[in-house]
Image (tube, rainbow, N blue to C red; front, side, top):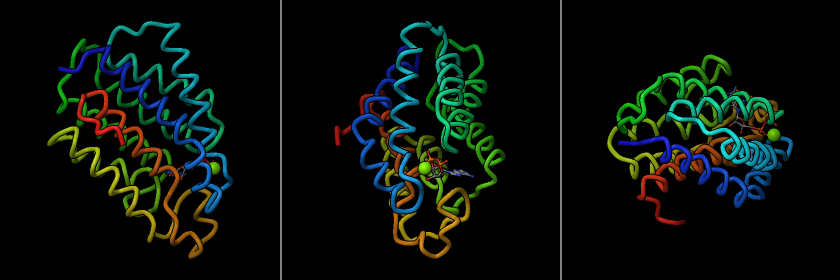
Length: 203
Ligand code: ADP
Ligand code: MG
């Protein structure tokens, strides 16, 4: 079972990964966006680290809703409201339970992804964070390790795609040949989840 500490660990591991990989995320965004994605993620998750220290949410759902609210209020770019909605909606779907199963988390993330799709209007193959997250949540039904692999593959598979949503879509065909920054950061979120579960490979 996954308890509140597990979810806190997931969020702090995500914050560490966003901080470590911020330059790479910004480079990806420099190619097909406005070069702020690494800073957006670093700033947003640093604020999450702070708020999780100050407030002590008592359920897995409360950890995620607090994180989501924090991202929405601290990140200006498109990614703030989208990641914020993902985590807030996922947290809401987990309800008041003190412990949840991996399968329950996968189902709740499915609800979170539906909310992201509704907010941003993107679908699979549009070259967004969803291209890493949708396969990851499918993989999570099997194991944390499969979720991680599916997220990594999904992020890499955005390279040949043409962007249909967000800033990168303004480039039309010129968005082809670059990895989507939001899909890359989404893979970090899923890698941190596997790390929290003790199946991270440290790479
Ligand atoms: P901004 O585009 O406002 O500068 P960021 O650079 O922080 O914001 O985030 C860009 C990422 O947000 C993209 O790489 C993409 O993955 C994601 N994104 C943008 N628009 C959408 C959307 N409508 N639906 C899903 N994800 C999106
Ligand atoms: Mg940007």
